[in-house]
Length: 81
Image (cartoon, rainbow, N blue to C red; front, side, top):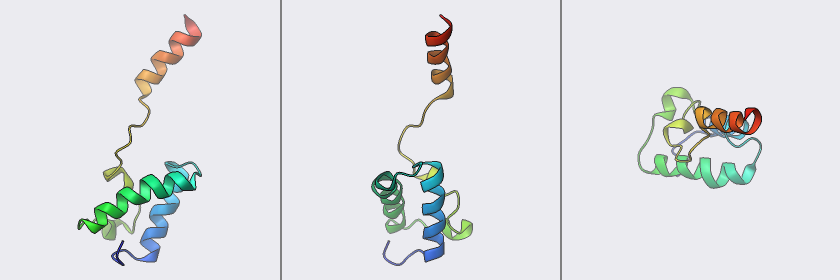
């Protein structure tokens, strides 16, 4: 990230994503979360400075997460019909 971010900011971001988004998958952390964030930082994003790296990834998350309504409808169809 071209020394644009402090170690503490990077560690906060990595720990949060490792636990909440990657669920312990280091390859996913490196290949997705860190790659997207690094690209944003290199492009000039500096909003992480205000938050010390916490809560930043959702601003760059490009992967579609599960949809509660779709999940519930599928679960209902499988279990109750």
